[in-house]
Image (cartoon, rainbow, N blue to C red; front, side):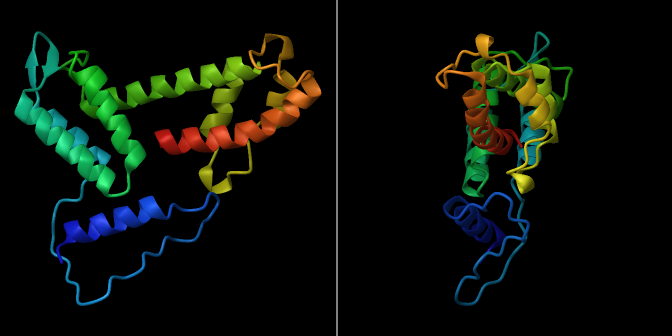
Length: 203
């Protein structure tokens, strides 16, 4: 068996059996039966794909452009990343290519990884702002909490007491709880699931 096939097996395993939040134990992949021998191959990850894009695209009028063959190769590698168990990262990379590279929004003088990080950072801020408006939370405080949050301690929301105190129930779009006390009780549960989902999506 070559390493590529083995990595696809590992990726499929990860997609079928995702780790439990808060589980600090190292992931153990069940071994395949029969004789296996790994042979060297290129490991596909987000950094590799961003480097590939940078090597393959050309510049025109200060913007990056890509021909059909280059795009085919890029999409192929993004699919490979998904097959390796990195679905969320693959989705982000595909969206980045579709919405930024194809329309010619990427400046040729800036590294792709830098532009990708700035793009994902802007998306995180937009998601944070949306949740903050929905629940009447100070967006800067929520962003600070999000940055400090760790999926390995998924039940711990950094600065939650400060967030709860800062809630402006009258300004919240979601007022289904009826009053601030019940609103804050619901908020804690919603914040835990939201924080975990968004962190996993953008990490």
